[in-house]
Image 1 (tube, rainbow, N blue to C red):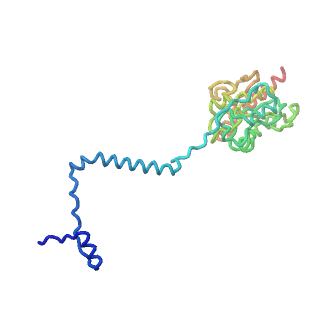
Image 2 (cartoon, rainbow, N blue to C red):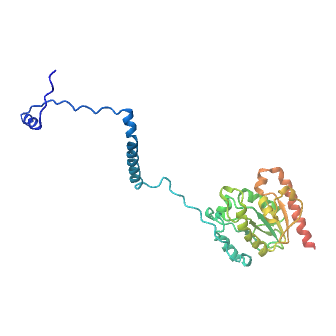
Image 3 (cartoon, rainbow, N blue to C red):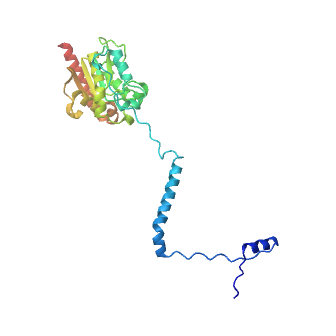
Length: 281
């Protein structure tokens, strides 16, 4: 076989001017990399790839936002207003409205201070606002509130603001242990109760009720500083700040457990008898 024709650059240029195309063999491919050669060169190739990838990643990441945008943290709990124990009604209500002493302030629509006559001899204490209470800014609304109103009316009481305590129906003041709604109506947490309880204590001191009706586990356990269940505390007269306390079930619970309404009626009768005994002393 004849050896392939080899042309230098000057010859290829002359033929190109003449319009003659000359076939030239492709240069031989480099020999394949043997396993040994690949092993020798691997560290350099890996290092080169890592450096290239790192550079591209760094350049690309500078132009992209973070993978996840951090969510705004809820406001940190701040100090409770000073001198709660010395406040009058307007100052106390304003302090509650602006309170940020615990994280519940982040999700509330309204604080729920209390409702009813501030000259009332009866006080009802519940647990915490629910969804409707948070929307309206009043305790015990919705179906549970309607049931409570019927229970109170049965013993001659009303939540009307201008009710005369000497006439029937007599006035009652209604408040909750917590003034803000827990998210999703979850149970109050001990820290939240501890932050909010001084407001309730001041409400009791300003109202000076003759008797307190505590409704629901968290109201009962907060006032009496006990972990005993309501079933073991019913049927007795307790004290909070020297005020007689009668414990009973929360109206929302009674809506789910209808047979317990008979027990709640017994509790109301005990509260009424206790109040009448105080009157006769």
